[in-house]
Length: 323
Ligand code: ACO
Image (cartoon, rainbow, N blue to C red; front, side, top):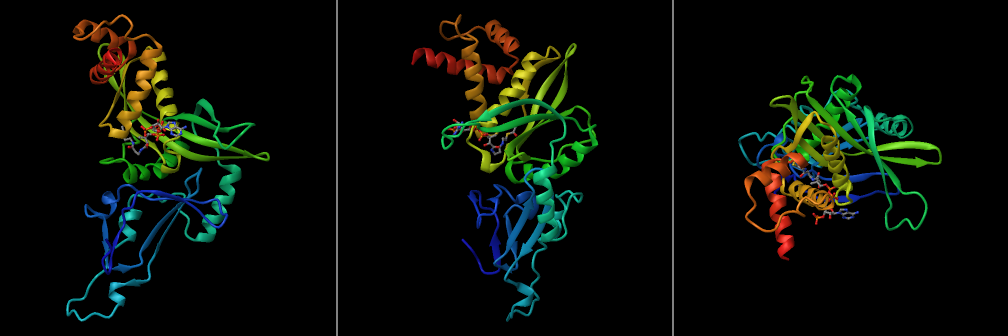
């Protein structure tokens, strides 16, 4: 519902555009961290708040458009009506570095980006997606990079990237980039167009290392996001599987846990963990419920999963046997 002078600003969904230009538009799932719990801005007619990002470098151009503002409209009220400040709350969560001042400057950034931007960090994995539309030939490549905040270039990149967590992860907050225990995984789409290689950010995951008694680390996924245009194509699964296999292969890690997972994340994780557990015969030696705690603990250690996740998967594994 729309009210005069008051704009509803939260509209999840995605549309692809526009006039042949290579622009993808999508809307935030949440705006309350910026514009308050009602997710409304008062005092404008035809308000549009546009955050323009270059797909790779995330160079940013922020613009606010509206048809009319309430203090410019005729009013019978004796009390002067003041429109909400749209600009400041948004700028407070944007990185000032790589911020373009004009649309022209932004267009130049995008053109440069397409030719020159390369992801920061160490490439740790790549895979190919063969879409149904592509009958033959090469698919699009995707690359996963691992970074730490000691890398100054990456720290700057993360400042641009982190705004997204407020828009798409419920209850998310910025993390402390001064803490060296963070690892960040970024996932990029790599397009090779006639010799010009260009990258677009697909998603990312922040992971923290906790001390695990006596001489190991516990890895905890803190923020996990696949940008809306890329969701539902298996990229979240690919990123999660890479992180899980890295933890499994590294003797320094005792297990992989997740901070406050959303339902969608749990769903994606369950599918991937179940596939891995079944492929590795985790439930083969287990007959039926109840399963004793020693067996659960052994499975937990072997597959480096938390008790909660191991129990969930075990339940699904047992149900599969009945079904
Ligand atoms: N084509 C179409 N659908 C596919 C394909 C494909 N090639 N591959 C997988 N899918 C389906 C899966 O079967 C699954 O189906 P479901 O909807 O029935 O569950 C679904 O797509 C999701 O699997 P993925 O594609 O691997 O997941 P996605 O890339 O969409 O990532 C995630 C999932 C991370 C939850 C993403 O949607 C997202 O970022 N959401 C918003 C933010 C969020 O909730 N993040 C997690 C917060 S919790 C935390 O941060 C710790």
